[in-house]
Amino acid sequence: MSSREIYLYEWVSFSTKEFPENRNAKSGDIVRIITTDSAGRTPAIDILFTDDSYRQLYSQAGFAVVAMHKPLANGDEPYRWVIETKIAPWAIYVLERSSPRST
Image 1: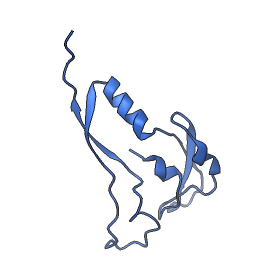
Image 2 (image 1 turned 45 degrees about the horizontal axis):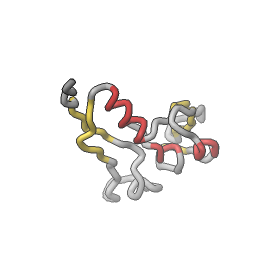
Image 3 (image 1 turned 180 degrees about the vertical axis):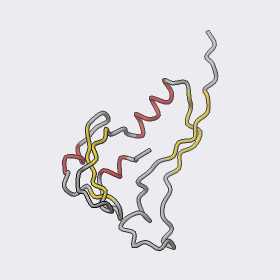
């Protein structure tokens, strides 16, 4: 999943500097981002989901988060990273089915 941070910073492949309104976005709000390595500069339109919102949705669907990973570049890759070695643009949630509730 995209992390909230992907809409706040500049990345090697994405730009958000044209969309300062992303900074005040809350879960459910529209956010925009531009993919910089393609010919077109048409922004992608997305809906922001915060970590709390993802967790709430998973819980409502009967799942528990057992781990969450925010992978970073390690700097050994053949790219000139902007911020990817310090802030993760993605979040990977590991889920398990929640135990059924007793009544």
